[in-house]
Length: 207
Image (cartoon, rainbow, N blue to C red; front, side, top):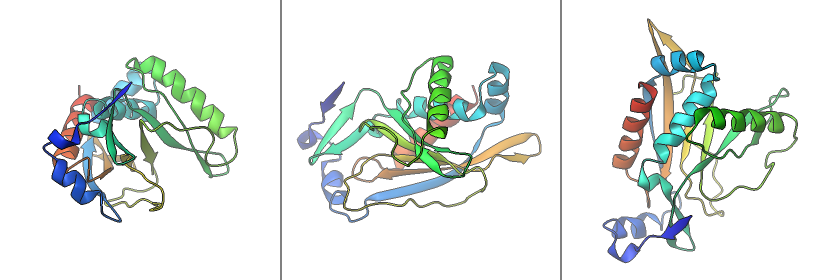
């Protein structure tokens, strides 16, 4: 389900019109999050840690309205639910773009994730299926404790999809930390909204 946002009465109307004209309207913020509890909880539930923090990331996305906005034909569309396309690595170290539907139930979601991982690992190529507009782009770079991140972008292709990336899992004493990068289209999302997302994600990862 989706609906159109009334831009004329939107308090960000000027911001939308301003940033929509940019050649590069995306901006990104990088920070560190605590995943100590999340790692232990995933182990307790016998769910892969990747599935756990991917599920919590999607849960947080679906709680922040601006992350559910997409630009279509110069209109702002609000989707009721956001799913995910995550990069999945193969044995030959290439990767494919997956598509996974969000489910509130983490065990059901894990079944979807494992099925999709198997499909990608047995499929060649990059674009392996069709991708709806109501997704986030998700990736992990588990080899690098990055402090900054940029994305390859095709400026000829309209894109307003947020991009979330996680880095290497780092042990700091009794704590486990991961760096995260969140990139979003500035016509739809401001630093305030990314702040709300990070705050909600950290809450979900520690409760």
